[in-house]
Length: 66
Image (cartoon, one colour):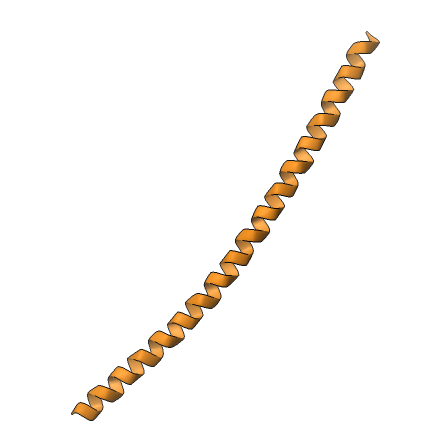
């Protein structure tokens, strides 16, 4: 009986180890995705700021032509 319980416990521990490894891989993947999204977001913010600056400069030039 103790041998069966030990085998069952060993199997559960192995399953937990595999689950832990899988969750670690998933966590690393999600961290990479988060970093990529943050980088893309910053690039879009920078592009938006550049476009805004250009539009403001155009508006200023147009006002000086009036």
